[in-house]
Image 1 (cartoon, rainbow, N blue to C red):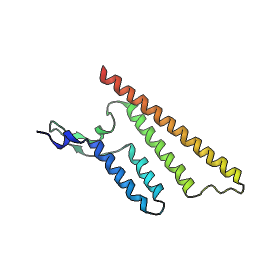
Image 2: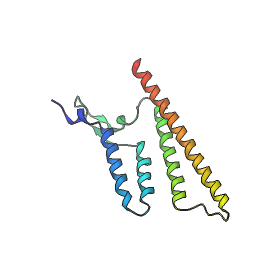
Image 3: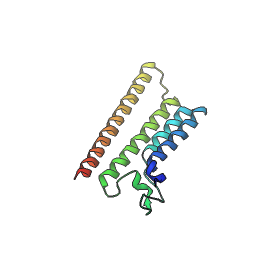
Image 4: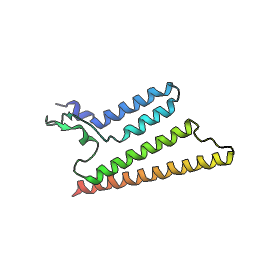
Length: 143
């Protein structure tokens, strides 16, 4: 018998819910910013409570769907990715709300260029840590 837990993972359902909620923000004022904040801040789950059923019927912590409980490195990389998403949201909010008020246009362009470089550096850290984490998981599963 094929159960629901065999068809769709909890993480996939969570991701689809995040995307649906993020899409619903689009019609509001500053909706683009709120939508991105919803996506960024819910991409990496740091805290969860409760249990989820598993294939064998034994309860399983929901957090186990998102990060390896035993690896401190995995938890650190997970928290680092979440922190980079927070910083990315703050930078986007500063740009969207026009917090950069400069008398000269060249200073504004410099500030926006630095923001773009900062976002690029954060993306590099996120991708690098994600690749490292995936490599660790792959090599652990082969052992």
